Length: 563
Image (cartoon, rainbow, N blue to C red; front, side):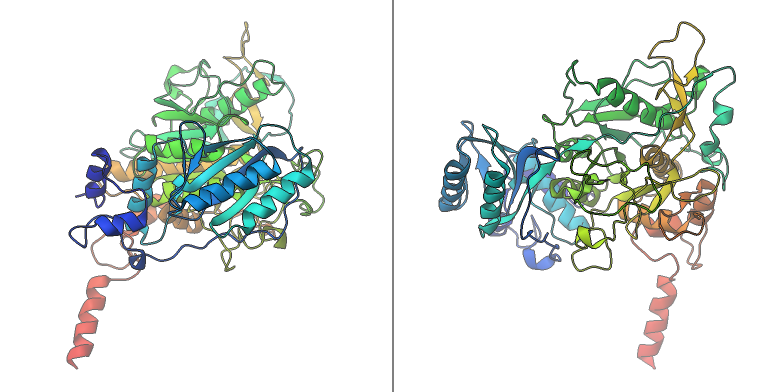
């Protein structure tokens, strides 16, 4: 029986409380409903910054406001704000009017609040840890542009409010872009030059996975989170889901870049090998969906949340966005290809640097979704002090989203690519150069007539190409588990697996992690390291240590107690 079935019944009947204090008051019998606050581990709160600088080039002009959990804030139909404590709502509105005037307020997460509450409380049951209250993320949009000093004053005063967990400026986000390449004619079959499909150490050995039941991904769905795609491309399957779609304006100068980037990512995952038109996707039988995050309409956080709601346990969310990080962080030595904001020179970093994105991912992974995210192309060390411990697992300020962060490596040497972010938080790596896929710059020119829907590239790269390699491998691992009638892995369990079973990077101080080796992974998953008759993969999925024979340990404890 699903451990959240009672919560689902309350949600479906409209009776699920939105706040933990209300849940505790209505719990009957005492052990039903939401977990008591004392029964789950407290979560690490993000540290409020002492000062924040507003830069119109690096920020969207919107403010993300996280009210303390269970604050009861709601945005009413007319745009007014209500709260469990009316004086808190009054204090917020008074501050906004007195500082920036009329301000549009909306929730960051657009789903019904009762659905967000369900995911929160269900995630807490699975993880035995507090989850962030997604109902309490607000987006503040001043009606008129404000001077940087005014915006900075507002955010500072918001952070001074005791009922505010954090307020910060929303950073602009960009799709990762690989280097431009040369043009040549598509005169040979493309699958034979997709080296990332090959056995290790060259590739991830997708061919071995394809030989197993479920090994082409048919039992695991994938949703790609980015800006736009070209669904009409000849080598892409129909989407099973399109969520949070916001049309990119036709006059946006980056429109074709967005579309080509998304198409290249989907080709790596879902290119159809049976049609003999182009390439073979890693998880070519996985149902593929998309969730769009056009800058001023749909936040990355909301798109991830909507994607999670469309999927079930074991499915994969791929986050192909990066955002501007803190200014002043040095790049990888001798690297000229890093991606930075052109004005502020802030490096592009993982999307979860935005706290609302991290909260969305944490809720998704706590509810059984696997999240794979590009580490970003800023060429910086995520352990740098400028990140204040956010990406350092050894720091007390570390915030773990549960996602699998992916860096990029050179295919031939295994060295980190120049632009890839790196550090102890990076979990896995994939090819960051020479990736053959559907339509990037169209440098594999098809037979005439060439259109945007029948072009291919052999130079997709950066963490943009590395992340779908790992996401495809993750989907195959999950689908093979289902094909064996065995439980799927959590995002955290799959992350641990990818950190220990793969092709090592070349010795280098810039850590980007192992590249998945599906043969070695399946060899370990089907072994029984502790001799207890249960496969390693099953034990990992159940949260047990595959190297410890629990039955033997219990027998030993009984023996010692009897002695």
